[in-house]
Image 1 (cartoon, rainbow, N blue to C red):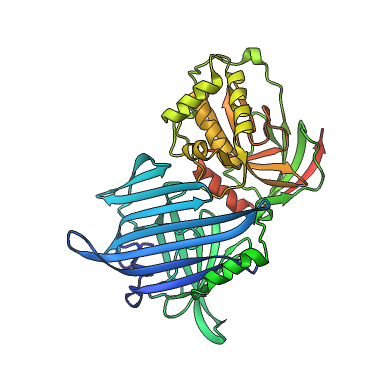
Image 2: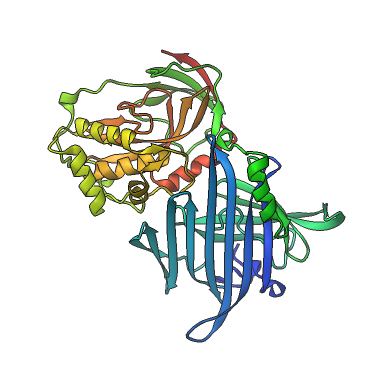
Length: 471
């Protein structure tokens, strides 16, 4: 159902009158250890051209280990709403090490005009807003930190603009019950609010005054209402106890896979509908209840059968996207230098693959992967390698797409991204590992831009694998 307070007043249920001037801190914990905080400030705002409204500032910082390297991540957002709580404009930024990305948006009539800033290069897009539902900006860790009047049985449905995927997405919140919990040594009555966002479930415990006391986002993540001292505790944690998040994005293997394995059969559990489990190299051979047996085979590619450049097929995989900026002058120039006069599409793709393997420094990064950003920093993990590969391949006239799934290494299957190129048939490569043909240890779950990659998150705590054959 829609908000009782009005069709477009998206923020109103979450900005109660006594909280229009607030300063709130939430500690972020992973497996009971502090890894960061969320600081939210709400204050009155006066428009330059008259009128009034509210300004919402959000500063989220996290500090953790990822593949034995320290990652410091900062998300910042500034949101302006009018006096009826309708979204007017916002600025969002993400920084992690040398990587930076900014997204800003302004509501004009029925549209939101969005600008993406990647290393000073601006791209724009226009998004039509739903008139029957309110729109809010997605927070990175938690959607809300205060609520207005809550009633058991009440349901909120609204649209969220996700600055990662640059898309409007649906969010549902249900006030399920009241219960008692301990807070600051006292037993208080709280509302329990359940949310469902992109298939990820979250539970919030909310005081009668509308303050979020605790949130559980699953997979070991918990947010707790704190004071500003969480900042110093997070800083101390950096030297006392390292939190390694790589285990969060991995699945243990029952056997050790041989290096460069060419064939595997795997029983996969916990992957429902809506995922891309079948491709030219990967197929479902048997279904057993909620499990599936998949077979993956690497196939040799005949260079003589590869199409000549430029390829006039698969046009959708030749077009640029928000983060695969294949028409950028610097991307085009580099693609020409790498490919040179080569006309064989497979050899050209291999040249791009090997250039990335040799020239992009392998380092884990928490970022919105952008080809322009990776070209500037010359570093990154699988996401960065893959998005730059796709941009260079498309700039060279080779259709390219992004595969997302799991890859075997060191006894576990980890989250991974790798590209596929169309050279008369689809060939999967891996510039992160320097494989001109991706080995059978790559399990594809999805393909597409970052908006599809986010769907992988909801699988990571559910998926199980059993390797039953390899050669």
